[in-house]
Image (cartoon, rainbow, N blue to C red; front, side, top):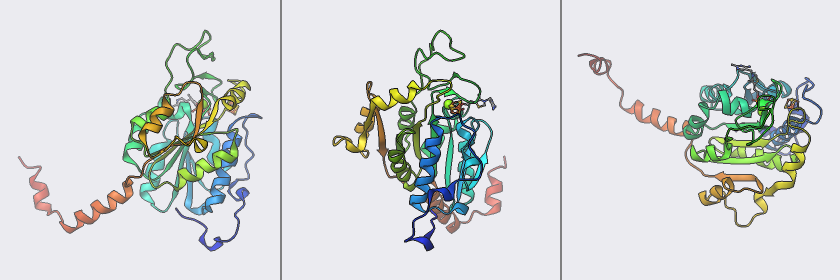
Length: 292
Ligand SMILES: Cc1ncc(C[n+]2csc(CCOP(=O)(O)OP(=O)(O)O)c2C)c(N)n1
Ligand code: SF4
Ligand SMILES: [Mg+2]
């Protein structure tokens, strides 16, 4: 992580990370909470703006890079992850955050997710999950609940939703967390832990869409919250604790669900490069492998 080391004893103000663009999100949108929490997390970690990059796809949530004062890339729909991973592999010093919505990450972009989890490149992926396609006016998304009424499911959804946490766990993501845009203080703690984690970290942020789902989405989430850091039985190093979270029905757990240290991709790559440089392949031997 690249930080503002010469300001070690000074406080960094969260506003340092905000760009001059005024967000165009609807008043009350959960994404404002995510932007604020992210700036506070960056400030807490004293990240250097010139060593920080945010990559997104397309959607209301994917507007995030424009509102942050760092390197940013508003990519094409569903492609935040491969671009973020490419940036990190090209420059290991960068703090790389990929961001997007539930549609971006789990419809068109879902093919990239399992590979990001298992490959374990040291980036953070945040999905601002509002259970709908906000930007395109409220269509059904892969995380829309059963029976959800949307502009493309007028009589209620008949599709089983994807649970991003269950998916991440099944794909061996080493760090899995959930936060709520309506509890910024808690979300900052979650984001700080995710960015500090050495390896792929995934954070599902419940970020209500007041326009196409409605104001009750905030209220319903808030009523069901269960804070894992206050649960003495939860141990994020123990996979059984994570399995308990994905099977819960009545509550919505927020906090660090899974945290499992394993060597990240860049570390393994450096080791591999070192071993390969010791036994240089001869061009003739390589060419022989193509000869009949
Ligand atoms: C290749 C491609 N297909 C479809 C679209 C249209 N499109 C733009 S955003 C979006 C979905 C946005 O939903 P989500 O990712 O959940 O973001 P939200 O707006 O809800 O934050 C779609 C289908 C597009 N821009 N590009
Ligand atoms: S449409 Fe929904 S997700 Fe998009 S800005 Fe408005 S409230 Fe937010
Ligand atoms: Mg969405």
